[in-house]
Amino acid sequence: MEYADWAPFYEKLRRELGFAMDREEASAARLRELLPLAALEHPLERVTSRLRGKEVVVVGLAPRAGPPPLWRRPFTGAGIGTVAADGAAATCLEAGIVPDVVVSDLDGPVASEVNANRRGSLVVVHAHGDNREALEEWVPQFPGELAGSWAGPPGNGLLDVGGFTDGDRSAFLAETAGAARILLWGFDFDHVEEPTPELAARKRSKLAWARRALSELSSGSRTPLLVWRRDGTLVPYSDAGRDAPSTR
Image 1 (cartoon, rainbow, N blue to C red):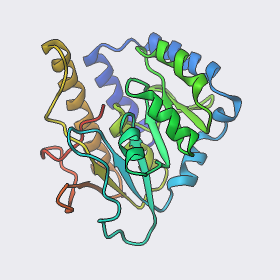
Image 2: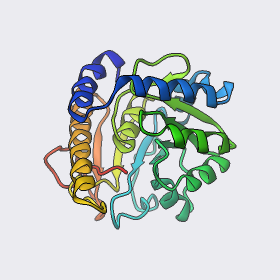
Image 3: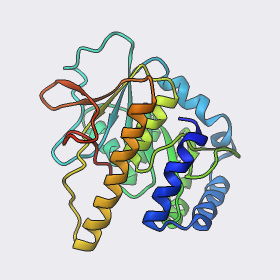
Image 4: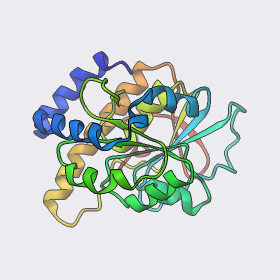
């Protein structure tokens, strides 16, 4: 998705959830400083080289979803790509799947993402106003190929192709990179596991926006966006269904 199309949606989201843009900008600036110079060069082109023309499975971390059963799905022959949203990298690795791309704001089990990066995954690290400490801790520990993203205008080495949470941002990235189809696996908007009612309410609010973001993508793109159910069926994405994504 073009930034000009995405920006008005994000501005509404930012105002409702109270994200301060100056904090976003500060984290993005620090991410640019922490990333190796090579990570700032042609980030979208490098992602595109891994995903263009493929059926891309975006892997979320819904409870009990497990890894995508790539061996079961009768793909069309276009080739299979995988994008793991944050902690879903661990789920993939446990099943012997090394994701082509990992999308992360570093709030999950980051060690598994470092492991995936060491094994060949390109990790797209997302900077936002609340993860400055995680950027400082983890970005220097990634040994492999990196790219960066943030929630403002793309440029100076950082991406913004749309999306809000790691899961829906993964789908936006796959669409922009030229995926033939996008299959959402392990997404659930309706079940929240948080330790306090306050955190649960905030999580539900974020998931509601993530659901809306994917609806925007589905309605505005020619790339088919499908939900891959555990019974093996594929259904078109619908923001009304319970098959739509929960991203962590």
